[in-house]
Image (tube, rainbow, N blue to C red; front, side):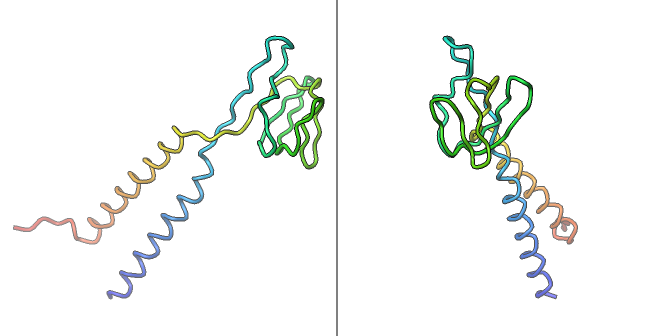
Amino acid sequence: MRHQSTRGGIRSGLVLALAICLVSGGCTTMSAIPVSPGTGAPDTQQLRRGDVVEVTLKDGRVRKFRITAVTEHALEGAHDSVARADIAAVHVRTFSTGRTLGLAGGVVAGAAVLLVALIVAAGGGAISE
């Protein structure tokens, strides 16, 4: 019987670890790049190689890619190149501290509730006199 209990604890731990891994990628947000006052176009000077961007073109099409190069005239990706003159808006993926803390707190709280429920269901929460 003890062997089964240990295996259940390991399984619960693995499920929790998997849940944390799956949701940890959700700690990012897409932030708008501000418009340059002089040109009225997004200020792409602050973009860097490796940034993941969502570019809205002036014709309304949207492209999402990882930047491989930022040149004077274009944002380039492995399979995309967008002329700066064609860009209406740019959003860049950034790390979100608030979402990360909220997610971590939610995972810890959920694990605590699950643990208490498992203890009570197993009869460990009964109060005896």
